[in-house]
Amino acid sequence: MRIRYLILFQFILIIISTSCRSSRNLTSTSASRQALTITEESYINNYRDIAVSEMKRTGIPASITLAQGMIESDCGRSSLAREANNYFGIKCHNDWPGPKVYHHDDRRNECFRKYTRPEDSFYDHSQFLKTGSRYSFLFDYPSTDYKAWAHGLKKAGYATNPDYANMLIRKIEEKDLHYYDNGYVTPALPEVKKPAASQPRTVQNADKALVPASPVNENNIVAARVQRVMENNRLRYIIVRDGDSREKLEEEFQLLRWELPRYNDLGNDFNLTAGQILYLQPKKDKAQEGNDFYNTSEGDTMYLISQRYGIKLKSLYKMNRMEEDSEPAPGSTIWLRKIKPVN
Image 1 (cartoon, rainbow, N blue to C red):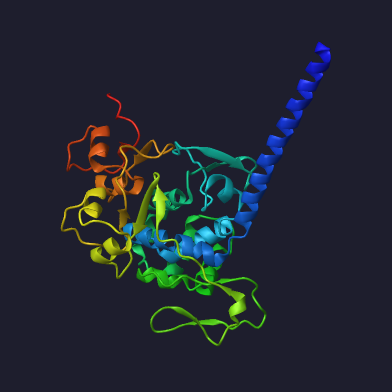
Image 2 (cartoon, rainbow, N blue to C red; image 1 turned 90 degrees about the vertical axis):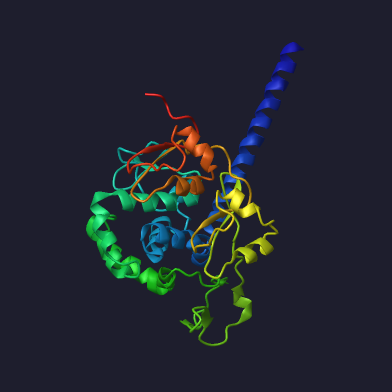
């Protein structure tokens, strides 16, 4: 009798285990299918604000950032993007201290950087180009010269594909991404359900909004919902756009007069700048798990770092045993989650 109960108990455990694995597989399959339904238009709508913000911070054309991400990650549909939030195919290299994943590329089981969220991949892409000596000549080109940047990236060896520069240029011109290099954000691109063979092309009008060259069947168009509020370090934030005013934002997000300056370590009479990050709730005392420290480059300030990682400026100074109002030298290590070790 005891043996019979033991066999029955083991049988129940097997059923439960199989059920759990099936549930996990269904969830994974569902997530993969959802990722595979991402369109080029939704990709652009999701990441254009970040691309423009990074352009204003570093000088890298927003069109180049968007086009590289679209090509390298297949608009976020690649396994590397889905598993590691790596949208630019950046490998580990010797100086990468963060999480890693391994994928077959030029060689088998190559090491690639893994990020907590897609936005971190965009930030690291900027830093990768900005701090890499072989890419330094690119920053002599203006942000509006996407063709020079495209050919420069190929020359510097960013990708091995001999047609890489032309691939970038074609993607930029096909999707009018060069309009983002002027620093403004155009209205959301419509998502097309089923591109018809006879669908009319689009043209750019005087107010920079994409409009059909001729009437389009409304049944083929789905309005894309533009995500204005994003999340970082479990905090809600927005990126300031051209035309925003403090009064407009306070009304739109139902904020009291004191909230924006207090949440963002700003003076009461602060001015808005397009591309600026603004938190809609109090920042944290430390960064999100996985962001342990940050290596600075030219132009980085403690305030910019605190905004990028959603950390209170005072806490950031305290963690790094620095005097308030002091700034880090390029190449410094800024701790984001724990107190700077005593040498």
